[in-house]
Image: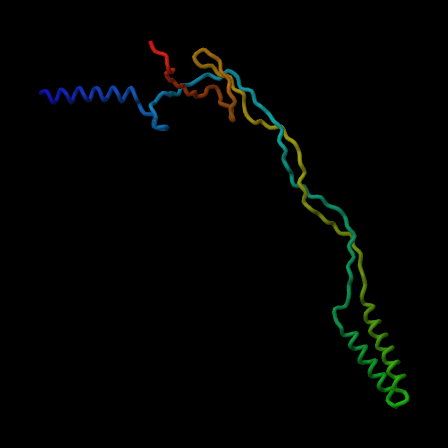
Amino acid sequence: MQPIMITGISLLTLASATQALAIDTRYGQPERTRYETARVVRVEPVTGRVTNYRPTEDCWQEEVVYEHRPRSKTPQILGGIIGGAIGYHLGHHKPNKKAGAAIGAILGSSIARDADRNRYSERRLETRCETVDIAYDQEVVVGYDVTYVYQGREYQTFMDEDPGRELQVRVSVEPVAGRSR
Protein backbone atom coordinates (compact mmCIF):
# COMPACT_ATOMS: atom_id res chain seq x y z
CA MET A 1 0.00 0.00 0.00
CA GLN A 2 2.86 2.33 0.67
CA PRO A 3 4.31 2.28 -2.91
CA ILE A 4 0.95 3.33 -4.38
CA MET A 5 0.65 6.24 -1.95
CA ILE A 6 4.14 7.52 -2.76
CA THR A 7 3.37 7.39 -6.46
CA GLY A 8 0.10 9.29 -5.97
CA ILE A 9 1.81 12.03 -3.93
CA SER A 10 4.59 12.26 -6.50
CA LEU A 11 2.11 12.67 -9.31
CA LEU A 12 0.25 15.41 -7.42
CA THR A 13 3.48 17.26 -6.73
CA LEU A 14 4.61 16.93 -10.35
CA ALA A 15 1.23 18.17 -11.65
CA SER A 16 1.36 21.23 -9.36
CA ALA A 17 4.92 22.05 -10.41
CA THR A 18 4.03 21.71 -14.07
CA GLN A 19 1.05 24.03 -13.64
CA ALA A 20 3.11 26.60 -11.76
CA LEU A 21 5.88 26.52 -14.38
CA ALA A 22 3.79 26.18 -17.54
CA ILE A 23 6.06 26.37 -20.55
CA ASP A 24 5.30 28.95 -23.23
CA THR A 25 5.59 26.80 -26.35
CA ARG A 26 6.52 29.76 -28.58
CA TYR A 27 9.60 30.75 -26.64
CA GLY A 28 10.44 27.62 -24.63
CA GLN A 29 10.48 29.67 -21.42
CA PRO A 30 8.29 29.60 -18.33
CA GLU A 31 4.99 31.25 -19.22
CA ARG A 32 4.84 34.72 -17.73
CA THR A 33 2.87 36.27 -20.55
CA ARG A 34 -0.82 36.20 -21.35
CA TYR A 35 -2.92 37.91 -23.98
CA GLU A 36 -6.00 40.00 -23.30
CA THR A 37 -8.20 42.42 -25.18
CA ALA A 38 -8.11 46.22 -24.81
CA ARG A 39 -10.70 48.72 -26.05
CA VAL A 40 -9.55 51.16 -28.74
CA VAL A 41 -10.71 54.72 -28.02
CA ARG A 42 -8.98 56.68 -30.80
CA VAL A 43 -7.25 55.96 -34.11
CA GLU A 44 -5.51 58.77 -35.97
CA PRO A 45 -3.95 58.13 -39.38
CA VAL A 46 -0.35 59.32 -39.72
CA THR A 47 0.49 60.55 -43.21
CA GLY A 48 3.74 61.15 -45.02
CA ARG A 49 4.87 62.25 -48.43
CA VAL A 50 6.29 59.69 -50.82
CA THR A 51 7.68 60.24 -54.29
CA ASN A 52 6.22 58.04 -57.01
CA TYR A 53 7.17 57.84 -60.67
CA ARG A 54 4.76 57.64 -63.57
CA PRO A 55 6.10 56.58 -66.99
CA THR A 56 5.04 59.14 -69.61
CA GLU A 57 5.59 59.15 -73.34
CA ASP A 58 7.36 62.31 -74.57
CA CYS A 59 6.99 62.86 -78.35
CA TRP A 60 8.29 65.44 -80.85
CA GLN A 61 8.51 66.01 -84.61
CA GLU A 62 11.90 65.54 -86.24
CA GLU A 63 12.96 66.16 -89.85
CA VAL A 64 14.57 63.05 -91.34
CA VAL A 65 16.46 62.96 -94.65
CA TYR A 66 16.37 59.74 -96.64
CA GLU A 67 18.93 59.26 -99.42
CA HIS A 68 17.71 57.05 -102.24
CA ARG A 69 20.55 55.60 -104.32
CA PRO A 70 20.46 52.91 -106.91
CA ARG A 71 21.83 49.74 -105.41
CA SER A 72 23.13 48.41 -108.69
CA LYS A 73 26.59 49.08 -110.16
CA THR A 74 25.22 48.32 -113.61
CA PRO A 75 25.22 51.96 -114.82
CA GLN A 76 28.92 52.35 -114.06
CA ILE A 77 29.80 49.01 -115.67
CA LEU A 78 27.61 49.74 -118.68
CA GLY A 79 29.11 53.24 -119.02
CA GLY A 80 32.60 51.74 -118.97
CA ILE A 81 31.75 49.14 -121.60
CA ILE A 82 30.09 51.67 -123.91
CA GLY A 83 32.92 54.16 -123.42
CA GLY A 84 35.46 51.45 -124.14
CA ALA A 85 33.62 50.34 -127.27
CA ILE A 86 33.37 53.90 -128.57
CA GLY A 87 37.01 54.53 -127.79
CA TYR A 88 38.02 51.33 -129.57
CA HIS A 89 36.10 52.26 -132.72
CA LEU A 90 37.30 55.84 -132.77
CA GLY A 91 40.90 54.95 -131.98
CA HIS A 92 41.13 51.87 -134.14
CA HIS A 93 43.87 53.49 -136.15
CA LYS A 94 47.16 54.34 -134.45
CA PRO A 95 47.07 58.12 -134.69
CA ASN A 96 43.51 58.24 -133.19
CA LYS A 97 44.07 55.87 -130.22
CA LYS A 98 44.59 58.62 -127.66
CA ALA A 99 41.70 60.72 -128.92
CA GLY A 100 39.42 57.65 -129.03
CA ALA A 101 40.33 56.69 -125.48
CA ALA A 102 39.64 60.22 -124.25
CA ILE A 103 36.29 60.42 -126.05
CA GLY A 104 35.32 56.93 -124.76
CA ALA A 105 36.20 57.90 -121.17
CA ILE A 106 34.16 61.11 -121.41
CA LEU A 107 31.14 59.31 -122.87
CA GLY A 108 31.37 56.46 -120.30
CA SER A 109 31.58 58.99 -117.49
CA SER A 110 28.56 60.84 -118.85
CA ILE A 111 26.50 57.67 -119.11
CA ALA A 112 27.40 56.66 -115.52
CA ARG A 113 26.62 60.18 -114.26
CA ASP A 114 23.23 60.19 -115.98
CA ALA A 115 22.43 56.81 -114.47
CA ASP A 116 23.45 58.10 -111.02
CA ARG A 117 20.94 60.92 -111.33
CA ASN A 118 18.35 58.44 -110.16
CA ARG A 119 19.74 59.20 -106.70
CA TYR A 120 17.59 61.63 -104.75
CA SER A 121 16.92 62.64 -101.19
CA GLU A 122 13.57 62.90 -99.49
CA ARG A 123 12.78 64.94 -96.37
CA ARG A 124 10.00 63.85 -94.05
CA LEU A 125 8.73 64.94 -90.64
CA GLU A 126 8.55 61.92 -88.39
CA THR A 127 7.29 61.53 -84.87
CA ARG A 128 9.92 60.35 -82.39
CA CYS A 129 8.98 59.25 -78.86
CA GLU A 130 10.72 58.16 -75.69
CA THR A 131 9.41 57.08 -72.30
CA VAL A 132 10.41 59.27 -69.38
CA ASP A 133 9.56 58.88 -65.69
CA ILE A 134 7.75 61.89 -64.22
CA ALA A 135 8.16 62.21 -60.44
CA TYR A 136 5.23 63.31 -58.31
CA ASP A 137 4.74 63.54 -54.56
CA GLN A 138 1.76 61.90 -52.94
CA GLU A 139 0.39 62.06 -49.40
CA VAL A 140 -0.15 58.52 -48.08
CA VAL A 141 -1.06 56.91 -44.78
CA VAL A 142 2.11 55.42 -43.26
CA GLY A 143 0.52 54.12 -40.04
CA TYR A 144 -1.84 54.90 -37.18
CA ASP A 145 -1.49 56.49 -33.74
CA VAL A 146 -3.74 54.30 -31.57
CA THR A 147 -5.04 55.12 -28.10
CA TYR A 148 -6.49 52.22 -26.12
CA VAL A 149 -7.71 51.50 -22.59
CA TYR A 150 -6.61 48.48 -20.61
CA GLN A 151 -7.77 47.95 -17.00
CA GLY A 152 -8.91 51.56 -16.75
CA ARG A 153 -5.58 53.07 -17.90
CA GLU A 154 -5.01 54.77 -21.25
CA TYR A 155 -2.07 53.77 -23.47
CA GLN A 156 -0.80 54.89 -26.87
CA THR A 157 1.05 53.04 -29.60
CA PHE A 158 1.88 53.30 -33.29
CA MET A 159 0.56 50.56 -35.59
CA ASP A 160 0.92 49.75 -39.28
CA GLU A 161 -2.79 48.94 -39.61
CA ASP A 162 -6.02 50.30 -38.14
CA PRO A 163 -6.81 47.83 -35.32
CA GLY A 164 -10.57 48.40 -35.31
CA ARG A 165 -12.56 48.58 -32.03
CA GLU A 166 -10.34 46.24 -30.03
CA LEU A 167 -6.77 45.07 -30.03
CA GLN A 168 -4.94 42.25 -28.39
CA VAL A 169 -2.38 43.20 -25.72
CA ARG A 170 0.37 41.09 -24.26
CA VAL A 171 0.50 41.18 -20.46
CA SER A 172 3.79 40.08 -18.87
CA VAL A 173 4.42 39.40 -15.21
CA GLU A 174 7.97 39.17 -13.90
CA PRO A 175 9.24 39.43 -10.34
CA VAL A 176 11.40 42.40 -9.44
CA ALA A 177 14.79 41.21 -8.21
CA GLY A 178 15.78 42.06 -4.63
CA ARG A 179 12.28 42.63 -3.29
CA SER A 180 10.62 40.07 -1.10
CA ARG A 181 8.04 40.05 1.68
